[in-house]
Length: 135
Image (cartoon, rainbow, N blue to C red; front, side, top):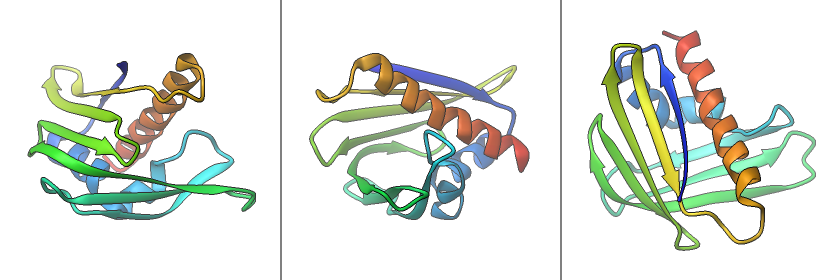
């Protein structure tokens, strides 16, 4: 598994809401400034589905990032299976410095693992910026 993490200066409730609420997801869920997330649906419950549309801002390409939740412990843990079968595990932990978010995922077989790590880290870094902006 590949792991990325960040620490967010926000309340646990706010960090959780900003991570899971489609209204906020569309504002931070992108790996680079030339991409965005124009649409997000999220049914945050076990066996619930999510779908985040990831699109180039110039409309040259887009794809749907989809999955099904397998385990949720409110304010602590989110686990899901991406539509291609890969597993993802996220934890939210209160620390002295803020909310530490750790995300571990099975790599895919197309792109080098370091590129995948950089992309997912960039997304979690965008989340940190968004959450702290609204703190």
